[in-house]
Image (cartoon, rainbow, N blue to C red):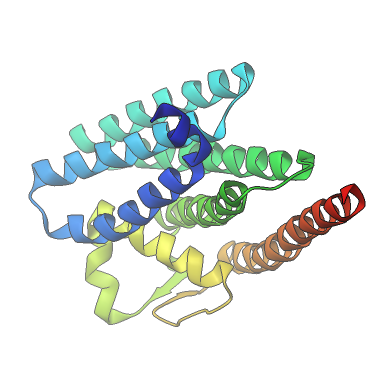
Length: 230
């Protein structure tokens, strides 16, 4: 069983990410205790990212260091009445760094591969989703510091008062930007969001083009080697 999990670790991670994406917006209607539990689930998913993505000792040590501080920042925000929201600001900064680190490790691993398996393809998809989540935390951080940088549709403006809904909505905005769909319910309304939006859009297209080219190249190389062996 453990061997099967190791061989399909990215599939397990993808399932966890999809589950988080489904449950996080629903948590806004839960009780306060349930919302705290939802926050802890998000932390557990970060730990799952740590165990799945990071294989080398120094990677895991750095990632564990970040996860400990992410957990501390989350607890600080949940249980304090700090009007400056220092805990939330620290949380978004640390999560953005953690997820960006995970994406960098995934990309490095893909470009070092000589062969490619289905689970590596799923890993590339996980990297794409994690990149969207990293940008989402950056947008949430900007909103906490400078709310006027965003134009929010009236239909969802009230949801931004809840931190859990706020996190999901900016993850949603990030994925819409990453995929260049760009719905108008959340829109940039000033710097620095203008710059962040075009940077993320370019990153999203570049990620797809480069990763797909690498995966196709590896498949072609495997096919050529098999044909020569036969």
